[in-house]
Length: 115
Image (cartoon, rainbow, N blue to C red; front, side, top):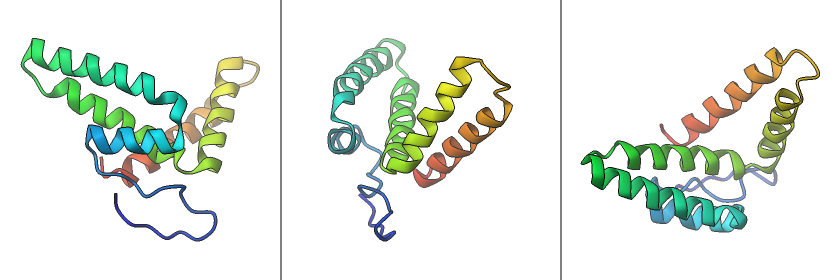
């Protein structure tokens, strides 16, 4: 995991290495209820990689969970993302601003994960 010191409102954990084991350990610390989903996704990605003889499914797994960790390790950011997703899902108002902010959050997470 890379070291980061952002003060009292920084991330819960450092950004982990982009390996299945490091991502699993990070998810176990910040969102333990998601470990079964990660494990299932890894199983499916591994199976698909073997069947297709391609690393693409494993790369997609790492990308997906790295973004998840990059977002969830910042509780305020994660809460904001969930709020924005509710706005979009509710369909009660124009979602354009919410979608733009979701995109910004994801792009920031991708940059933090070096994707």
